[in-house]
Length: 257
Ligand SMILES: C[S@@+](CC[C@H](N)C(=O)[O-])C[C@H]1O[C@@H](n2cnc3c(N)ncnc32)[C@H](O)[C@@H]1O
Image (cartoon, rainbow, N blue to C red; front, side, top):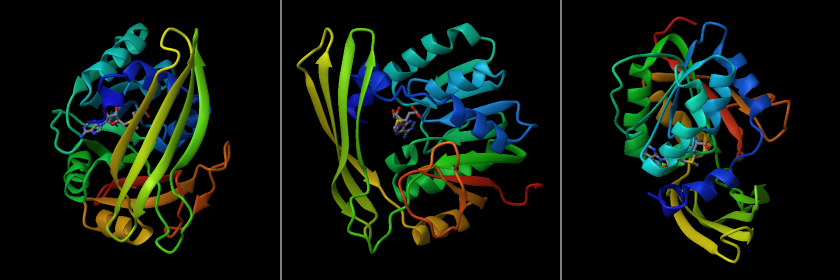
């Protein structure tokens, strides 16, 4: 696991703590009025969990990083009766219950190999109530494009701490379905000012064709794709869309619409 998630979860939490309120409203709309409980595999520090709990949803998040979960637990403490966080592996998990909906934002599934993603989707299907949606934010690569795929640069601050974050492709091989991404977090201000955390992340990448094959072989079916690169809008796009910020709406096969 990336040391950013394990050893520097506090900095990760500042870096990724942008405003998700409008996005969570949109996700709840997609999950539908019957959705009372939301599962988030790879929930990290719980920024999404708390936004759902604030709206009255019961939430269950799990992750492999104990330190990220400690922050998630602290953050969801005011909603203790609604929120559960636990250690579990996205690739293989048994929670002993089902959920009214599920979400997985910001390319978290890129941490799984193709074999792990296959077992992940099987596990997800077993944990969804009939008709429940699984909203996955996952970028798809255009195999013919030579444009960089990951390429984000932003600043974030909390209290005295101010960070500059760069997250870029180091290598991208769409044919082999692999990418190497470099994260660089520079602490500009605050108690850790001057520190620079750099790390390489081996990620699995998917093209529209390989993603469609993976979903077709799974117990889930893809209902729609939305492009979140247009904030506040997220138009529905075709299954051949590419880009870093696509949301895929999935549901278990043989489940009521
Ligand atoms: C990009 S972060 C996203 C966290 C959270 N979903 C969010 O939106 O802030 C990816 C998370 O996936 C977790 N992760 C990676 N591989 C995992 C696995 N096999 N099982 C569970 N969690 C995993 C990491 O520890 C990290 O917290």
